[in-house]
Length: 221
Image (cartoon, rainbow, N blue to C red; front, top):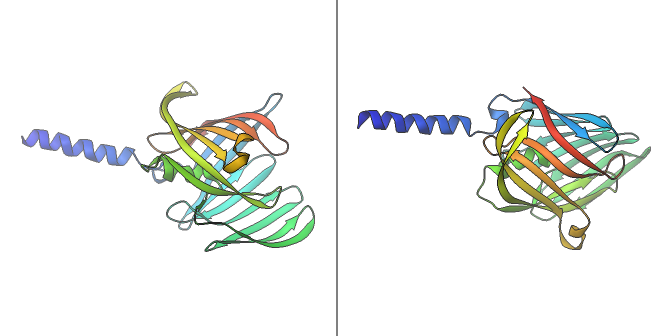
């Protein structure tokens, strides 16, 4: 009986340790390959700090730095690309924006409802992966139209996915714009079921132009 109890406790400890968010298990930098029809880009997700939690996404065309709360909801962000340098901060339901947009100064307020603001949703979906929720609505800022767009993410299935010769148990997620716009854009994502890490994306990219892309995790540390 004592031996069975020790084995049972060991299983619980092992499960608790390994089924944790990837950034709490020491992974702080992930490199991704973005494969387009006629060229390839490299992008990177990096945990800048954990208290406060700051995450940086950098690609060859732009960068997004966000600060998140304990539920991985966006508190503020800085977005930079060619001729665009914007700072946004959330105060209750109001998003305050200021900076440079296409070479000109801009200052604006945008109001959202009580849904989440998941600007770097490839990171914030980690909270969704570890929840019992089947779907969630959330908001994303579009820096090219200076607008907040409401999205919906849904867990479709659990699948095995191969990355660089290794096989991982994953959640297959589908994201769409809400309302009538849902027919115009969707994205398919795969996230590591064990640690919530973003593994793959198959869909459209909007910058620097609308085009099909497949993004896969290349290495992490």
